[in-house]
Length: 511
View 1 (spheres, rainbow, N blue to C red):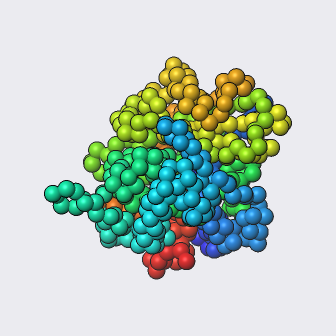
View 2: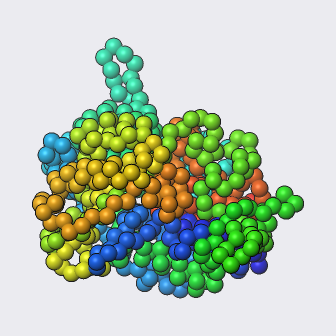
């Protein structure tokens, strides 16, 4: 039985902790805050309740597998999950309104044909077919296996782009999300649909490789799910599973150093507590770090030729965006037939991307409106809890602590959301604003950035550092490590780290 110290109680870290405990190891989690769940926060006021991080689950199989492998009760006995149908409603600047069904390729094609015109659905369906090819080519090395030493093979884009003929010129193959939208989808609204998926993950459609087609493919293939009580209920279920497996949690424990001994990770050093006169060293045989790698230790962590954290390799990588969220308490009940998620698309996606990735606020952003049909989110049926989100520049380029920009941008989001929610301002009881500055304070993420999933292509620039490191015995887990950000990907990283520790160098990935 090995002693394992886990830094952070985020979802990836807890997933690793539960699996390692089942394997017979003694696991202790050190969390600097007072609670677990990382980005899966919850805000409550006056009988209203809101997720302050991810609010929908894709690829639920990741957490079903976690619960299957770590205990007797399956996931569905620990939380109540329902498929969101329609999966999403989309409002475009020209007035087009289309709702896309959950996990129905034929249904999506029919809905797009009816709303956008004959042929639009077929083009989207053909696009998803190519996305499936990219999924088949890259799924295991990108998501289910430890990042190999020859990770450069993932630098090639697996998306089979269609050559676009040009008059008197050689055919052109789309290399970015924006180029796929212009050339293959050939409809500004279909392009906005694809680009909206990509931007919601904090990626720039103008520079992100076409392999990002995996993002809408995964959602439309494996479905969109809601957990009653919000995603915080999922975090609580994983925490309870860890406790059942006798994982120990120490909250308000700030790890300030990885202890090394004889060239091996040998424990962690904790900052002095309120009643302590000095720091405390806790010995361990392995250390699993669920914190941002760039903030963990100096650059000597990375071996020559390794994937580095974004912005740490001297490439001048752009800052990673965050989320601007407005929580609304409304008078009046949620109308029957209301879509859980509505996306109000920006009239100028190019201007929006330019603003977000150059450190400005977009004048008319893409806004996602979440309206869960969940009695636990509201005081009674005569009220409604509603959440607005937009992708924005991180804290730093924009001072999100300044009350002026916060309030003005909340007004911008509410104006856009009015297209989806009639009489929104008239129904308002109060609102609460969450910005990247709040995310940074709550999670420690630099600038409140939200890491995106790893993607193949772009010469490997969108990959995350491997779960194993230069220092034997030290492993990385969570959104800042392979295979990147997102709730499902965090669970995958926990699987990979547990496999590396339990099986060692022979581990070849999850099955």
